[in-house]
Length: 249
Ligand code: GLP
Image (cartoon, rainbow, N blue to C red; front, side, top):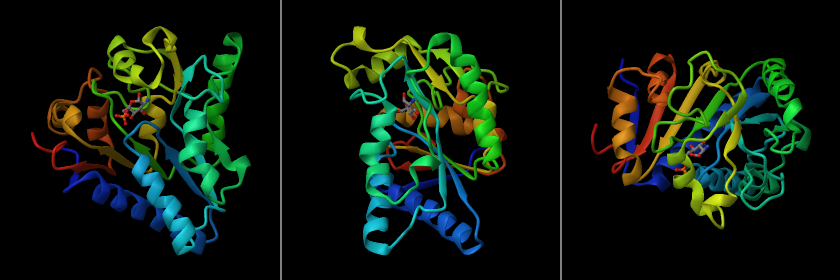
């Protein structure tokens, strides 16, 4: 079963579409007096979507007062305010510029003592359930097909947990750090099953580095070796691509 795709001339247009989908959901939940639970991603891919949401907040009056967020992942260990932390990324690119209630923001912490991580991950799952589950999950994709930090081989049954980063991921993301030896070897990530339980999934991918893996995820066999291919088994997932990332479809 192929994953539906929408192809845009460039990432700006694709990001505007994604931001509109998110804003429409927030507004329709607002109109119904309900909260809107978003699963959020980091990395370079969603940056312009977040910029567009900030613009919609400032210029179009889009409010995030009813929004509850759960981020996918975080390096481990890392200080929450470290330059490379996903906690900091989310504040710099989105949360500092909108009217979200800080108590509605959830991002895995890289500061949890190792012996408490297991309990912390269970608690993260429970908080998602208590919020009513994720209405819409935003995803990027790693060059090796990972979603969140679910590296190849991650089980479809996996839940939020501590994982070891692949070497290829450490190399791909090392530009975020002064040098690769400073990069954490571990991360806390939502699991594949956590992601699959979201009611709707939007995965974005831009540029030539993603062309090959997008083709595998969308059209090839479903395999845990390409975690994003598991999204073929989700009944409401959509890939939002630029023409270059879609070139091999
Ligand atoms: C990172 C993140 C993923 C992200 C992916 C792609 O390691 N953990 O959530 O989707 O890799 O990153 P980028 O968007 O920078 O290409």
